[in-house]
Length: 236
Image 1 (cartoon, rainbow, N blue to C red):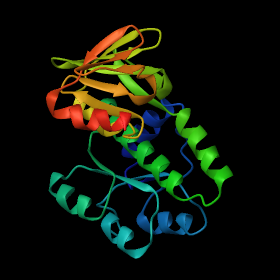
Image 2: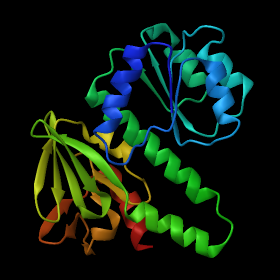
Image 3: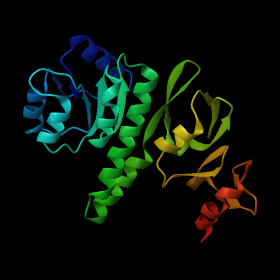
């Protein structure tokens, strides 16, 4: 859902969404009152919310109604950043919104959406259904001047390489211009574990764990001293 009184801003977000297969824009509201009317009858996963709008400020909208969706604030005013996080927003994008920052915010929002869904079901069958959805989850990784949609189950490990990260997949490697700490924040903590300052590893792909290293297929990855306790909890 896009809530913004500027047509140009709406078109930019709409265009960014059109490049990501797992996003569908279900509503575009010109102001907070329109958005509230829509949300009273419908539910969405993600809201792109402008702040300076006529009739009602974006933060006032969040105060007025209970929003379960992940809210990504979009604004040209950086002074609102601290207030935004105080309202529990998912992320904060400065206008004009670049595709790189947009994708990072979306990956973060989708992770939160899926965690929330996993915590809600009460019966076993619903839990299994949600777990299956997470197993099929994908993220977009920028490499080779393109955004590659990658299934989490295909990631073996991620290695920090200076300003880049080498994302080792089951069939290829992507060199992503992204910090390993950013990947650690975006990827589900129950599926990926930091084993070294230079390595983030898929838990399900670990075959063997030795004293100072572990093995993922044909790769041997060092275990950092400060990460050993966390890694060996997997054995216990």
